[in-house]
Image (cartoon, rainbow, N blue to C red; front, top):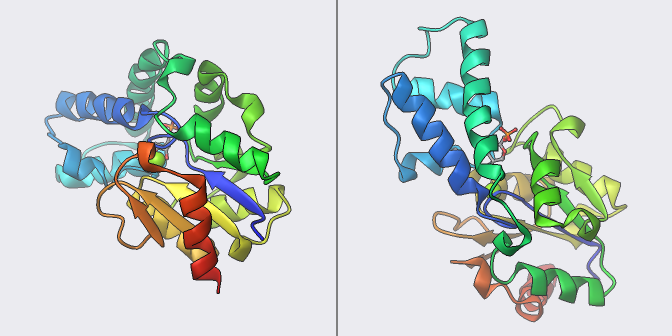
Length: 220
Ligand code: G6P
Ligand code: MG
């Protein structure tokens, strides 16, 4: 029996992971730090302030700014990111996701969201997906970002689900770590996610029957 399926948002439901990257890249360039997509893998699933710290470390500038300046930089990055969200419509739900949600619902299994983003609600609204989720664990409900298990455990609790009987879906290294630390079954979508219990390269390959099969094998 499966208690719940809990989705990450950015990079799983829609490609906002790319918007986060573009916005961070611009901010980093403004202070003379260059970041590439490979470095960006480390930012996925990490809170806004923690991401900024990682970028400053990358440029060896972690001691160059006051906390007020850092707050201001994080706000600038967010303003830039939110601009990209203006273009987001229900057509931007990634391939395979709507079918997957439908299949899970047909089986009567509750669906949750686990995103540390303060923009999670805005994104879900733009995609017209607020109603699809039975429970959303977001930045307002947690104090530690991924890879800490807090966010997935909070989502399980909100759905009355036992973690060991639940499935988490993630595109981030830190996200898969968070799922595993919570005791859940991890579906990883993308590169570098060999720690996942079941790994795919794109959301278009997500098939509910296959995921259930893998979960049942793991659960044996
Ligand atoms: C998600 C994304 C991260 C982002 C974080 C905070 O975890 O994967 O890239 O930094 O949310 O998002 P926010 O919208 O609050 O800046
Ligand atoms: Mg993600």
